[in-house]
Image (cartoon, rainbow, N blue to C red; front, side, top):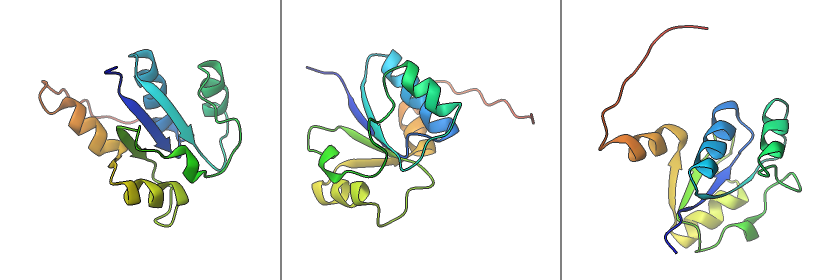
Length: 115
């Protein structure tokens, strides 16, 4: 099947968890890991069935079946899942790199401001 299979390393971030939910809603197969997740990310991931059952890093979650790894900012260079993804030669993107890859053929609109 042609469904993109995406794994988030550090899925609990404010931007990361929203992207994970959006991609799942789009029909992608989404999984993720994190060592700690706080609300509102935690309850939102739980609502969509994306909250990791156990917190921590599990290299066994990283397989050649994955099309893309999206790497959160607080994942360290020696993260066991990242090392496994590199070993398998998987495509690894940061959040902004992934957004660029998904939108480079489309018209992009940027809105600046503060909150």
